[in-house]
Length: 79
Image (tube, rainbow, N blue to C red):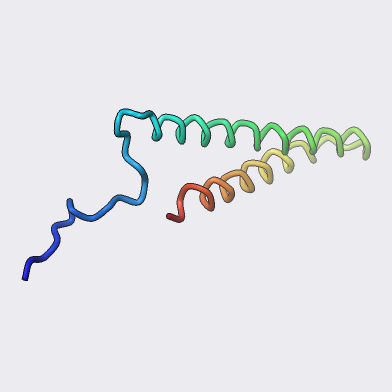
């Protein structure tokens, strides 16, 4: 009876086997994080413009970033 060593267990994230998979994932995550924050800020700016306020853009930025982090976690963090 042999016990499996921790190094024998498959990793949760794919490793780069020369095909650039982890680099593609890194660029995708970076793109999601930047675009999510920008889209949230843009939506907040639009609401600020419509309502005549000046604080919703910050709320939109934070909400956009939070939703993006949640999406990235669901897509890449729960293998």
